[in-house]
Length: 185
Image (cartoon, rainbow, N blue to C red; front, side, top):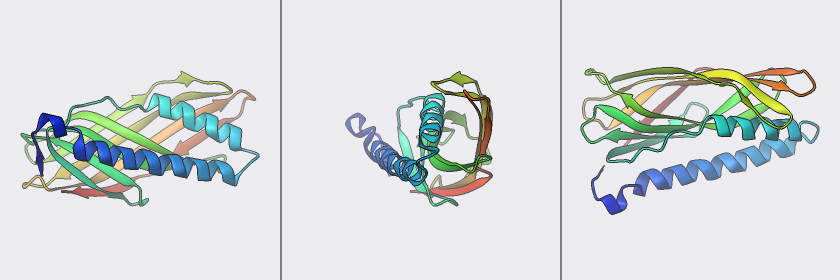
């Protein structure tokens, strides 16, 4: 379905984004409740990572594709009307940390060019950021995939890696691993 009506511009994408945020908030609450000894540290890492991973807002005109990752979390992509760019992409990812913690987060991309054969490749460093009791010392994320000729399906691989330093001197490395996904109209 093509979204051209400006009053409905955020319709399907906004609904999908709201669902992702509700699911991720529920998951974060569940993870934090499971381990009371690590609750504060995990919550601090999640809050800091969320601030650092805020995707740029992009208007949606074109097609909105939705699906799931191999971790069974939602993924939503907004493809431009001309099929030449991914205006916005959001996915829920679960990172496994060297401390044993699991961090469910939302990662996002905006304005990614789509090649003539439908391929998309992006990678970026995540800069350090300080928080209360925990600091994000850096990280990286990558996104690769392919849009089919009819612009109706997109499949690819997403990866997110973050490194944290706690105020007590401990460090924690968190990685989603290579998470495959597929989305369709």
